[in-house]
Image: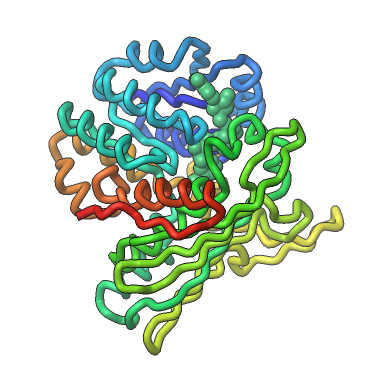
Length: 368
Ligand SMILES: NC(=O)c1ccc[n+]([C@@H]2O[C@H](COP(=O)([O-])OP(=O)(O)OC[C@H]3O[C@@H](n4cnc5c(N)ncnc54)[C@H](O)[C@@H]3O)[C@@H](O)[C@H]2O)c1
């Protein structure tokens, strides 16, 4: 299976290229190409990952996708507001799609994508990698067995480092296009739905605007209150605001209080403390994505960032070989598809309306 990656920014450097490169070494995928608009993006990617070769493409992504043989894999790793166009172009070129989260920002776009994919028998997978964190899979099993009572109140937090403000984010993370809740809060909304089977029914998002170094204004701090189908309430705080000198690569976690039970995931402090000779104290995460030594020599990616990409790539291969079906993938619900994770678009669409109106409560569209 050939892979075209559209976009060559941070997520491609950190997670997507290392994962695909290992899958190529394992014989799961063959050629990897990466498309960006500027040579500097691809040069920076090659410099960051010198031992992970890819074919650089600077043509428009519609052309790159059309030139890929049919029914291969297109990986969409572009800014949030461009996902819809790129995913549709990939489908129209008859490609299976892996799209980074959030898929799109409206329900209408999610329905259009689903219809286009269904017409062509193609999979669209939304890369909600936290689903492949074993602790999420363990909690899902236990909620399903009834080992937790009814979810009532929860808090989730995910703050990315302050230094994201100096990155390419300042060119696209503007108030008109996205916000901290849409960008990163969607992970925990998705996880709570994934683990409990509940659906969000309303949301209120208070945003605090801040300026990027280039003067663009973004909703860089958000506080969301998501109400669920059983009346439970989840508070989600997000920001590009974690101190760069903080011990973790970011801070994140989830606590869910249920009837006579609770669940707490510390997703930042994962049990490791390093105090190194450069004078730094750090709490690294071995769980998302690390490269570690293997018995074959060299290194391999480990963590849920890799497992998520591996699962999606393998599923595309299985679909093409007739070993599984789109209906089975949708129904199993491990891989997020437009159909089985549409509540995310419902929350994002309502959340965007809420933040623009100072945090009023907005009902999520009824998905039944
Ligand atoms: N934890 C996560 O799941 C996670 C983390 C980071 C990013 N993301 C998502 O990944 C996406 C990209 O984020 P990022 O951190 O890589 O951002 P980034 O700004 O570092 O990279 C975006 C890339 O897209 C490229 N690009 C923009 N328009 C293009 C076009 N028309 N053709 C080709 N390339 C184009 C830019 O040049 C840049 O290389 C976002 O949707 C973000 O929400 C998810």
